[in-house]
Image (cartoon, rainbow, N blue to C red; front, side, top):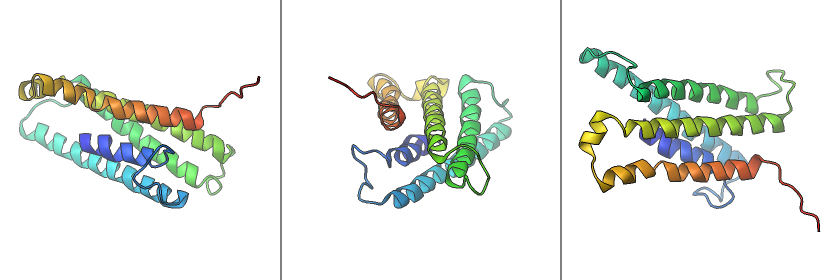
Length: 172
């Protein structure tokens, strides 16, 4: 699930970045399709990961949802599903007879997407405070893993705020 959120979701968001993207030679329509593909991969991997975690907890007869990480994870999964549904509203506003204009829907989708991405980042970071992770990874490697998800989060925040926040015109 960490790979899905850290790689697929990040790449799915950064497809629209002007600064540089692996797919910058593609048209907007192609980028949109790649965005859908990466976000669908996130949903599939997250659902699969959830299934494995529930099965593992059931086999070991351990209680579910007993840590901050698991609670954040459920919230992240729910927010991801909600955000995917909102993405469909952005694509098909006329079919759903929405009164909100498409540019405003895109702004809402981008803003909510940023919140979901930051929630996913907090969830991934919270996993690093688990007993298992701290027993497995120690020293400098632990700090590297802790900082690793934070740098893409800063890049994504910068991209979304630069793309959607209103810019003030400077007058001399």
